[in-house]
Length: 355
Ligand code: F0G
Image 1 (cartoon, protein in one colour):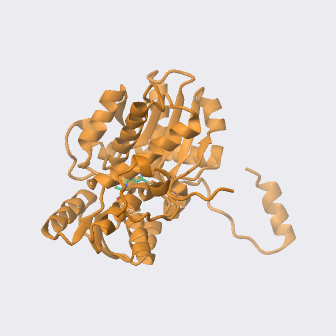
Image 2 (image 1 turned 45 degrees about the horizontal axis):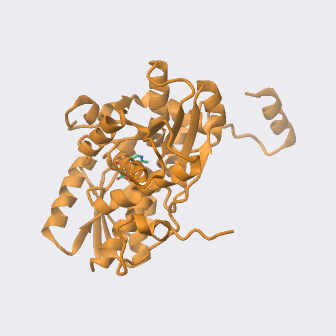
């Protein structure tokens, strides 16, 4: 079994790395691309799931964070800061712990999944909740980072985040043996779709692929600023990870969609939760609600006749379902019974109540 060296070592020649850059690693990247057998059969498509929930902190953020933190250390910074709907803060906190940095985190109060908060706290970040949303938190940390040269901002406005995250596209190409017809992805702050597009584009320049995928990104309807064409002051969605009303990489998302012949579209909370359940029930793949926006969007556009039958599609599942157990339990149809610890009761329960 070959040991995976982590993203920085594996893609050294395609990342902004030099002799002074520390090769930080929690063995991020190298995530599975899982063929969705049942859903593909049902929809008449060929769907593969890029399961980013298996990164060290359970989301795709680790790909960008490992490089952002390595470059912060290289520059002599001792403090990193971010605003987050949860995953960025979990990832920043982990790599800060690994490298002995101070980590400051601003989160929207009451609007992040408990598992993500637990991660940031456990890794030792200094967490501050604001009475406001992600967009306000991001504006505040941007200003702090501008004020102080000691503090490095590690949100995806930091270009190293995008550089690190583009490696997911390299992996998809390797795993699929080429580019898919479509790359379906949730859109929040719009950094990830920007990063995938850069990764595919660079791969074509290198001659690894000869055609590019259509990039189809999906915002939650209550937070669909790009689709509506204007920022949303009070974004709302069950998918708290993408509860963002003023995406920082807005233009990157628009460019990816336009230049690839794709689209930025939106999906409702109902469509997101249906896809979320479908992935768990039919494929055995548990992602977080926001992560299901890509599949939800594929289903929506297939029904509209905008996706050709038989298309080969990669859906990016950005985060692990375990981060938000509360939401998972709330979408399950029934409560589980509590019964006496005896055979008669168990027999009665399992044979007479078969679902
Ligand atoms: N999916 C998950 C699970 C996320 O956590 C995020 C973003 C996205 C999708 C959207 O990615 O912002 O690059 O368009 N989460 C950020 C955070 C905002 O703070 O963790 P994007």
